[in-house]
Amino acid sequence: MVEHASAATLEDDRPPGAQGGASPLPHGATLLGDPLALAGGLVRTARPRQWVKNLLVVAAPAAAGQLFSVTVGLRLALIFVLFTAAASAVYLINDAKDVHADRAHPEKRHRPVASGQVPVTVAYGAGAALALAALTAATAACNPATALVVGVYLAMQFLYCTSLKHILVVDLVVVASGFLLRAMVGGLATEIPLSRWFLITTGFGALFMVAAKRYSERMLMDGQGGRSRALLAQYSDGYLRFVWQLAAGVAVLSYCLWALGATGSIDSAPVPVPAGESLPWRQLSIVPFVLAVLRYAVFADRGSAGSPEDVVLGDRPLMVIGAAWTVLYGLAVVGL
Image (cartoon, rainbow, N blue to C red; front, side, top):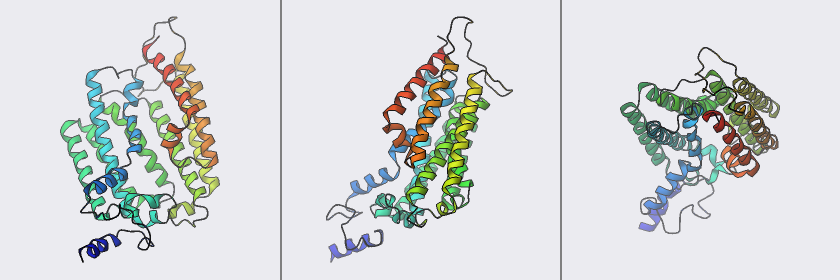
C-alpha cells in the first residue's frame, strides 16, 4: 500500500501519457524520499548554463577600465550572486506557470517541472524564496539604485511570466530589457557613469539575440500549431527576421559611433590616452564586433539560435572572434 501511495503522489506531476511509460525519477524513488533527486531538479530548473548571462554585470566597469579594483571586484561578485538568485527565481516560477505548455514542446517537456521531477508547488515556493532573498540582500547590502534595478528586474520578469509574454512585441522588449538591466546594474553598483552608446549597443544587441531566439523557436514549432508558445503563432517568420536584422544594424551603428569618438552629454569621460603613443585600438575593435554579429546572424538565419548560450559557447570561430575583440578593447582601455 505504501508503494502504491508513493506512486500515486507522482501521477499529478507527470506529463500526460507518462503514467504508462518510464518514470522521470529513478526506480523506487519518491519526491519526498529522494531529496537529492529533488535538489538536482531544482538546480536544473534554475538553469546553471544561463548564469553566464549575469556576467554582463561587469560590462560597464570593464568599459571604464575599473575591473582591477578590489572594491569594485567584491561589489560585482555580490551583484552577480544577486542577479543569479533573481534570475533563478524567475526560471523556477516561469516553469511552474508554463508547465502545460512546456509538456507540448519537443525539448522543454524534459525539464524537471514539466517531466514531474519537481512538483509545481515546490517550484513556486523555491522561486518566491529566492526572489525575496535577492531583493532583501540588495536592499541591505547595496546602494538604492542597485536595489531598485533588482526590484525592477524581478517585477518585469514576473509580469512577463503572468501576462506580458502574451503581448506582441512587448514580450521581446521585456526579455531584452533583462539583459540591459544586467549591464546597467554593474555601473550603478560601482557608481560608474553609463554611456548612452553603451546602453544603446547593449539594448539593441540584446533585442537582436532575443528576436533571433524567437525566430528559431518559430521555425522549430512550425508543425506544432503554436501549442508550446501561443504567441509564436501570431508572429511571422518575416517579421521576426526583420526585428533581429534591424536590431543588429542599430547595435553595430551605435558601437561604431562610440568607437569612432561620438560623444554626448551623458557619456562618461573617455579613457585618457597620450597622443601619438597608441594605436587606434578602440576603432579597430569595430572589426571583430561586426564579425561577431555576422557570425551569430548565420545561426539566426538557419533558425538554430534558440539557445544563445549554446551558440556563444559552442561555436569556436565565434569564441575566437570574441577573444580578438576582448584583446583589442582591453588595449584601448589600458591605453597601450
